[in-house]
Amino acid sequence: MPLEFEGDAICLSGLTGSRLKCSVISEYYPFWWNITSGGPSQNYQFPTSIVELDAATGEVYIKDTKETILGSSGHALDLKCSNQPNTRNLKIILVEKDASCYSHLKTVIRRRWTVVNTGLAEGPITKNLSNIYLINKSLDSALADIDKLSLGNALFFFDPLRSVEYSTIEKVARKRISSFYRTGTEFIIFVFTSDWFLGRDDFTGLPTTTEETSWSEEQKKTVLEADSLLGNTDWRNLILTNAAINEREDGLIELYKNRLHKWFRYVLPLPFNPKANQIFHLILCSNYEIGVRATRNFYSGKTYNPKYTPDNKDAFSKFKKNHSDVFAGLSGNQRPLQWRILWKIVTEHEEGVCDCRCSDFLSIEKDSEKRQHLLEWLKEKGYLSRFNIENAWNLPVQQYKLNWPAIKEKLAIGPPAPLIPLSPKEIKG
Image (cartoon, rainbow, N blue to C red; front, side, top):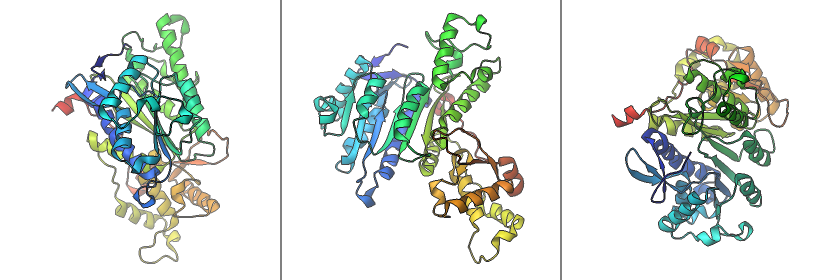
């Protein structure tokens, strides 16, 4: 799709799309950096990196309101430049392959952040000591350059106009996540979900049948692009149907989530509704429970989704009545390990996914074998179901997922409500 600019800002539309997306990013970047850098208690000493793989111009022009705001790469630069010297160990790496976007990006930087030496930032990457890097190359070439850097804890934002190839996701993940759901790497991935079904400009929506002889040449191209998005052809029988578009959109995101679970324990799609029937998702991928929960809360607060607050007191009372035997030897406010593990999964684990290697379980039980026994107890009592998903390391670590029907029956609490995007009508009042 053709790019438009207003001044140096890339033109996009939608108060509930691009504007809201940038607002969520503006809160998440500082939150993520404050934790991963060690924060004030550690003098922000740990190396961190924000890698924007489709940086655009740093500014976004919102057509609906005729205003220019910071884009995600602009928020990354603002975090770096506005918090010196605390951000001395934060690297900002901005990749933009489009020559016009890249030229506007440099102009925006020179105008907004005069302390940045753009000549140094786009020079040889191994000689750049500024910790700000500008790269005007294709994604594969840029990733080869980025490999030369020591990133520390890193957040990668894949923000193409429609989608990123799964092979690229795998390439970055394989280099960064070397052991079972290792923390220290997070992805945010943009997917313009509705485009796959409604089409846009010169991009044709997916066909509604798996019968290839009935596809137009344009539909064949879209199917091949979807193969690249998901990294296989297994999706076709589930998505190339005549079901309602919203059902197919949900199905596509669910399949994509399961693909991303190969590398990430937690996958959180945040829906946005720029206009009419358009839907896109920002998908947060992480192995760090607190970061995922905070992002859900950021989004919920801005879109009027209710914060998930299950009734602890009532649920605990029912748990105690059902399993009085595990309270033997406890006194006062002591809680059995089974309950503590269960409640942590309920309130802090996206999708209720867990395994014995979850780092937040360490504060409850340090011994891995004992943690596994606790999870098996919860499974035997019906609170958990086995979650069989491929992991990238082919390790035989059993994963689990909350069994919500049983939890609702036993504890009278239900799952978090599905996230609903804010509609243009709602934001305009």
